[in-house]
Image (tube, rainbow, N blue to C red; front, side):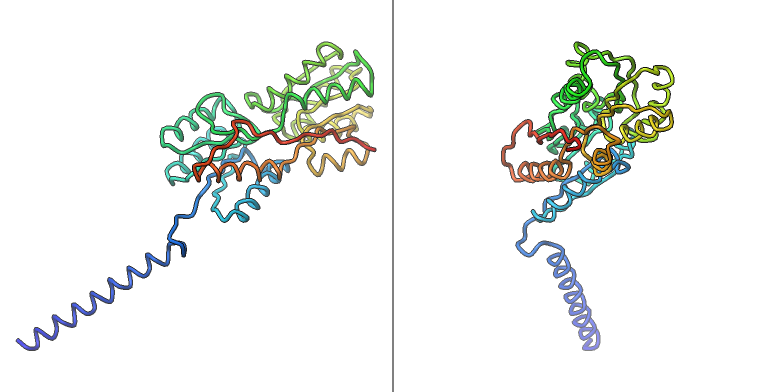
Amino acid sequence: MKKIWTLLVAAITVLAVLTSGCGSSDKAAKPADGKKTTTIGFSISTLNNPFFVSVRKGVEEEAKKLGVNVKIVDAQNDPAKQANDISDLIQQKVDVLLINPVDSAAISTSVAAANKASIPVLALDRSADKGTVASFIASDNVKGGEMAAEYIIQKLGEKVKVAELEGIPGASATRERGEGFHKVADQKLTVVAKQSADFDRSKGLTVAENMLQANSDIQAIFAQNDEMALGAIEAAKSANKKIFIVGFDGTQDGLKAVEAGTMAATIAQQPELMGQQGLEAAVKIAKGEKVEAKIGVPLKLVDKK
């Protein structure tokens, strides 16, 4: 009987030690102040574009500065992948969702799903057509399009023949930059061609080549981003033509092309600042603070001085 009692006491002691160990492990997993660390989910349209690499950098730097976690997923310019990525972030119960849509219409279902899960949504650079978005952080794309057309007129005069390389169909930035450009161009320029090149450099090259072959008298090209503009530069070079090319974004490669004189100008955004402002707004939302429905990031036209 004494031996059984001794074994029982030993077993209880071991169980107490194991239970104590589990308890200390749980405490170690929590922050020192006992508060849950805020986690922001960020779905970005593509990291195969220098502009969005800079946006990501801004988001990451601001997250580090504010002491929050950020989970970044790359949609690779695929609306279906972006929908799956956002579904995963919702399942992980992120505190706030920051989205940079591939397609503003297609993203609406994902925004609605986040709304249903009571996860606040903010849109970055491109908006969502439907669903509740707490804040939209972007440059004034319409104004940027106007600036591009006005610059072409200022440098080349009215009624010159111009072509337009459009971005991804369905993206709000494509619609807005085109809207601004045509507000001016349809009145004061002669637009002879416009076609989507999906914000992609290689597609910009191919589409611009076709445009220049079909319209040998094109004098200027407005590309809705610098990547397509850089493709257009190569197309003009291959065709042995001097074309006045205006881009949009102000990426490092775009600015280098302006400095080299191969690109006339770029409507420069500030992608790192955009990322920083987006993350900052997301953290405020997570804390229950109010943010503006539209947060504007300044634009500037950069040409060779």
